[in-house]
Amino acid sequence: MNIDFSPLYLSLKVACFATLLTILLAIPLGYFLARCNFWGKDLLDSLFTLPLVLPPTVLGYYLLVLIGRQSPLGAFLNEKLGIQLIFTWQAAVLAAFFSSYPLLLKSAKAAFATIDQNLENAARTLGRSEINIFFTVTIPLAWKGLTSGIILSFARALGDFGATLMVAGNIPGKTQTMPIAIYDAVIADNVGQANLLVIIITLVAIIAMFLLQLLERKY
Amino acid sequence: MLSVNIQKKLDIFDLNIKFDVESGLTALFGPSGSGKSVTLKCIAGIMKPDTGWITLGDKTYYDSAKKINLPPQKRKVGFVFQNYALFPHLTVAQNIAFGITHLPKQEKQEVISNLIKKMNLTGLENKKTGHLSGGQQQRVALARTMATQPQILLLDEPFSALDSTVRIKLRGQLMELLAENPIPAILVTHDLNEAYSLSKKMVVIEGGKCLQQGHKDEIIYRPQNTKVAEFTRATNIFYGTLSSENNKVSLTTEKFSLTLKAENLPKDAVKLQVMIRPHLIRILPLTACLPNSNVFLVEIVKEIRHIDSYTLFLKQKKSPFDDYDFTAKVSAQVYQDLGLDQQKDVYCYLPPEHLTLISC
Image 1 (cartoon, each protein chain N blue to C red):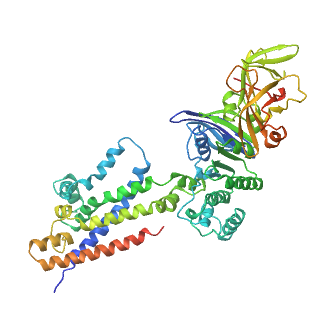
Image 2 (spheres, rainbow over the protein chains, first blue to last red):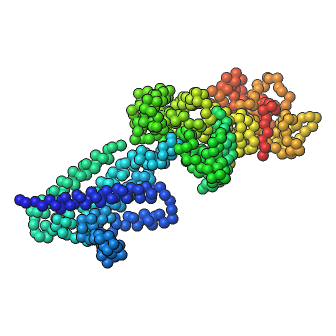
Image 3 (cartoon, chains in turn green, purple):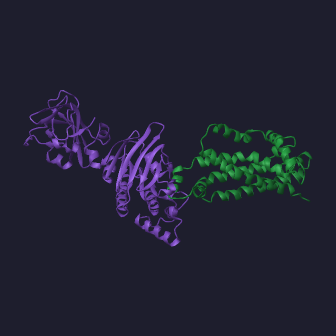
């Protein structure tokens, strides 16, 4: 039997890139929301959480409007930089990113907020620089919350269907991720293919979760 | 010398604190929520005052006029937090090493092993701090701070979470440590005994204001106002009218009259307050040879037994009032010698030299 591994490969690639983007953006943002007080903070917080509560297709539609060729941003990217995002795997990364980052944002914010700030103050009186304190005190103390947030985000990114379908479409070998390939197989009444893909993605998910949970025990 | 003069708007009151600290240990004493900890955090640079200045010797930590606000990293203060603030993800040795990572390895190792030995932490070097007892955590916190050789030591209620036996031991250890490293230290506490027994100088703070500062005995025996007297648990405070005849100054309250020492009395004062500490009131048996003033025939109406002493509540025999008049404290030895368990009628004597004036 001839198995096409491209949906699996694509799903992992998209989920990894989306998670990387999430780590880089959601952790600093979570820190900012946990530590800074300003007018309209709660509103901003709700706005950032919105992708989590919106139906994925709605999120996908917004993305489509945002980066589609008719939108100012899409037009700018297309005409000035020659980049067309729609129906590429990069669009799938964006879709997965937007549907998964609130999970890390929430747990990062909670993890940073529960740290006893006297620990950071103690580090200050002991002469450590602010950036050093962030990496040697704050991050280790928030580690459990951060890693569980990363695990959840990765899982969510791996499983996105609606938003990805909206902006990346269903192009076999190019943008067809596992969830979409499974849907395709079911629609085409290809039960064997569907079963196989489902088993593969389940195994991959279990292995990925196991590996990420090893991270959690570091501190 | 540390010199503090800071103002800061807080939620419940405005902080306006001014005091100086010389060498030795100074206690910032006052009730909870009086602004002591905030003051300490301003000195360390963890919090920022609105206006004023903080200087240590010729080093300016903070000066609103000159727009100087040194970050805590540059102040070289040693801060011991109330909950110790040990790093739970690090071992005891790593905690102690935290402020001296810039030192060469050999030197660092030497400092750590010296402090481990001095603070009785041998054998715990590689334990995470969460597994330690309160006293051990406190010692790690002290060691971690002293490793950086601070120029001033700030202690924020360091003993409040410990049980009394550990507390007494650790107080001794702190005093030894300060004897070896003669740097100024500030101890924030709401425990009067702790403040008195550890410090040389006391600063009494309430509601963000500095009520009185000076040598500890001055605070205890010559409180400047009623509040200081109350905070320092003065119980016998008498308010009355001043009169003098034949070189004898006396204070007449609604219940009795007391002879005062004429010195140090404010001129042309009419109404004033005096106080006497309970342990300075003397209890005399009925058979005693009596001094010629300030002696009262009293009955012991209530008593509280402590381990080594008794607090006695004394009411004048002839008094028509229900309330007791004096609180006296006698050692268990005196109590036994005078047979006070049987004999409830005694004389009490308030020596005029111990009756101190409180400015209202």
